Image: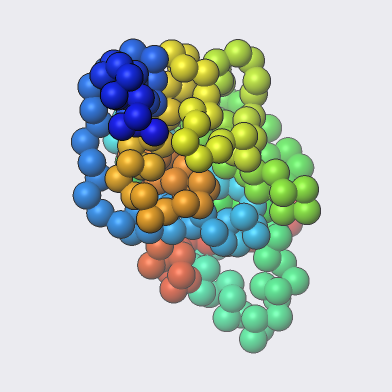
Length: 245
């Protein structure tokens, strides 16, 4: 399509390749397998594995917030946070029976790619109730990805300086709105950077036709989101149950 548009008008071809109305210049090719980065989780996440909600926080580009303070603020068990409990520890306790019963009351957390990540299914009542403590973390940006398997709805929300970056007060946007070869967000809008990253991913990786994989790859290349694949797979990710009471 890019070649066809380029033969009609070179500017059209450049705009298509750039994913935007203007010609901001070509993005650099990532030069590696997208499954080596954040995109590894796209497939399992649609089945809510390892967690339903993938949330990322930072105070400024390259500056993650304190992972332990964030987990505690959301309700993680203080003793397990202090002990440095890992996901493998939760899974091994009581022969795995306890975790089978309490998995939905657990969370995983840590830092990667300049962000702090907090993974969970359900948050306990009253999470983030202490607004002063939350403000003290200095969070300036957050990204929320949520999967609702029963409804086949997968959402993305990017919050910066206290407001959703969504090109029109849409709030959380459904990822299923993205179709291969199309720009998922309004051209020339605030999320235009993600349009460009998705188009770059399509052009760099024609072998990848799953739009969720391309979407996650674009989130990595545009915002720097990352999850440590080996830590999660081997159970070395910091983890805890929500505190009782």
